[in-house]
Image 1: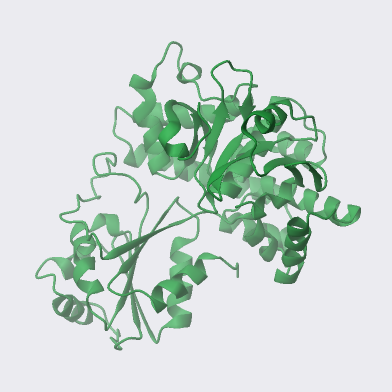
Image 2 (image 1 turned 60 degrees about the horizontal axis):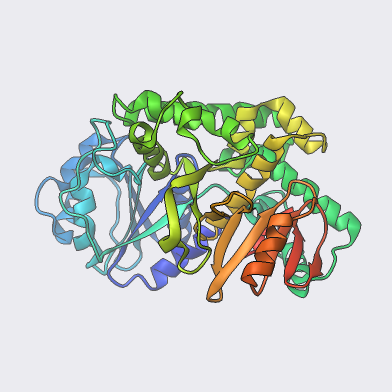
Length: 441
C-alpha cells in the first residue's frame, strides 16, 4: 500500500471543511480513485461511491430537485445497502464530468452537515468545449464558494522512497544535512543519487511504483509505462476535438526530442515545418489542462511577480512524469542513465524534467530566465521570501557561468545549483545533489 501525502490534505479538509465539497483533479492513473476509497474506508463509518462512467443510470439520482434531502433520498432508494450516518458518511462522486447536475448539486450537498462529498474524474482540467467526448456534460452552474479543488500528481521522490521502504527518519536525516548545509557522507550520498536516477526511470505512477517495489523489474516497468502512454493516446482520441487530435498528439510526441536539444524552448516548427502558435497553441493548452504536461514560461525581467513578467510565447514543455518521458526514450536510454553512461543534450533535458516535477508537486509554478541577448539562461526561477531565487540544474557537476552572472548582477539571497555531487556553499550559491531538489521551497 503506497503512502500518499494527499491523504493528510483529505484529513485537513474533513477537519475544516466548513461548507465545502472537495474536487480532486489530476492526470489519469495518478491514484485519485484509490486514495478516496482508502480514505472513505478508513475514516468514515459509511462510504458511498457513485461512478457515472460505470453506472450511467445513477445520473437519475440528480435528475429531479437538487436539495440535499432529495438527493440522499434518491441514493438510498436506488443503491442497495447504503447508510447515511450523520457526520460519518462520505459520498464519492467519481467521473463527475459525466453528470453536470451532480457537479451543480455539490453546492447544496456542501451545505448539509450530515454528509461529506468528494468528487473526481478524468480530464477535469479541460474546459467545456475542449472535451469532445459526447458523454461529458456542460456544467449548468459551477458551485463557486462551495468547492475546494486539489490536484493530484504521480508520486514525488519522497513518496517513492516510502514505497521502497525508506522511513520518515531516513528522509529527515537527509533534510537535516540540507538545512545545516553539511556534506552527506559519500556512500550515503551516492546511494541517494542512485535512488534518484531509479526514480527518474521508474517515475511516480502508482501502478508502476507498486510493481517496482516488489519485483525490481525494469522490463515490467517499461510495459506498464507503455500501457499508460497508450491510455493517454486514447484520451487524445476520445476527448480532443477532431481538428485537434493530430495536433495534440504530435505536440505531445515531439516533447522528448525538444528536450534533447541544447535549446530546450518549445518550437512549433519542430512539430511541423513553418508551424506557428496560431495553429498549435490550443493543442498545447489541451495538454496542460489535461495535466499531461507542465509548462515553464520565460521571464525577461526576473523580478516579483514572476507571473507578471512571463512571456507566454516562449516556454519549455515537460512531461508530467519523468518515468513516462524515459519510457518514450526507451530501454537503452534508461540503462544508460542508470549506469551513468548517458551523454548529450538529452541527459540535461531529463534532469530538467525531473526537477520541474519536484517543483510543481510542491505547488511551485514553473518559470525560467533567458535574457534577450541569449547570453544567460537559468533553468528555473522561484519566488522565495519576497525575492526571486534562481535554480540551475546540471546533469553532471559542470561550471555555472549563467548562474554566476545572475548572482553578480541580481544579488539574490540564495541561489541553488543542483548537481550530480554533494552539498557545498560558495557565497550565496548553494550546491545540492539532485535528490535534495525535494527540499527546495
